[in-house]
Length: 168
Image (cartoon, rainbow, N blue to C red; front, side):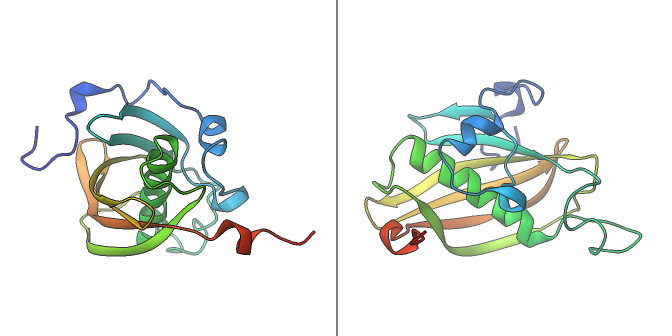
C-alpha cells in the first residue's frame, strides 16, 4: 500500500458493488445530471472510511466541451464526486447529525492525472475530523486503476433543509 493511501486495494474488489446507485439515491439528494456517484465498493463505519466510484462514459455532460477532441473529466467534477461520497458516508452513519450535507470547502486539492470516458474513477475517503452539527473534514484520493489522479481535503456542512425545500 502506498504510504498515505486511504485503503489498500486488496480490501475491496473494484468490480463488486456493495451499494448501488439506488442505495446512494436513498441517502444523497443529488438527482439527474448532478448525481455523479455510481456505486459504493467498501465501507468501514468504525474507521469512517468509504470507497465509491463513477464510471465515466461518452454520455457525460462534460464530454463534448471539456476538452473538444480530448475529453477529460473536469477537476470540479472529481471534487463533486468526492463530496457526494463524503455526504453518503456522513449521512448513512449520522456522523454530522444532519439530514443533508453540503459542500463547505476544499483544501490542498491536487490534480495529478486525467479521467477519460471509459475510465472507472475510484474515490477513497476517510474522515479526519468532525464537529457534530457543524462540520466534517475528510481526506480523499481519486484513482484510475492504481494511479492516483487527485487528492485533497473536503469539508461538509449541514444544509438548512427547511429553507431549501420548494413551496410547490
